[in-house]
Image (cartoon, rainbow, N blue to C red; front, top):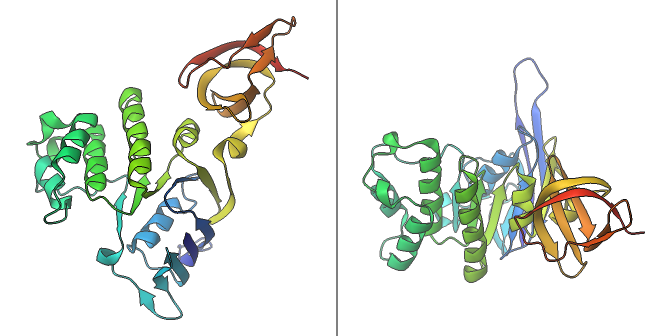
Length: 288
């Protein structure tokens, strides 16, 4: 369990100070996501967890190891926190080419050639390994940063908007690769995203941040779902065999429908054979 109970105040000229107060318990060996509008403190939370930003007070305990405790004056150095973090600015070394950036991230004597080749292939960066970081597009930098963070084989992987600059095809490839790798390694993955379909497809649970606090948490489908009545034209983002329903993303809302639905004229339509990623169209209403 990751137990976070921290506070941080950011002074601001001419307006009241920004106050962050995070209290949450995050399960280990799962994928959890953080969702909220810009400016609510998501990235600051990650920086404090990574040891890049010092909380004013509180505690951070990861798997019974104290990473931060203001009362006991404990602040574990970044190098001793078994984590890897990727932020939107990528934090790549501009004086190195892509290959050198990747090699720098790998712990000495722990080169995994199979993993390296797999990541380079999945992220489609083989052709730019010798290019300077300054020559890359934003999307290329993002792919390099994702690969670099995974190559470290951390126990805790923090990803801040990891797929925001990628097109749909690459986004999906890397999204599911991270999900499968998490299952294979049993690592803990925390990521920030504004894309609700993305959260549903990869996260076991989501923490919603508002005004510097965690206000809600739970299964992403439960957090984001709305009434499933009216016109349906959207993408199937999840299939729940237990509840026998599909979660369908309509622009700006998530609708959860049972497998058996009916059109206005009463003609039943079975949608349980739909696959994730398929588009469902038509006017439907729930069976009563």
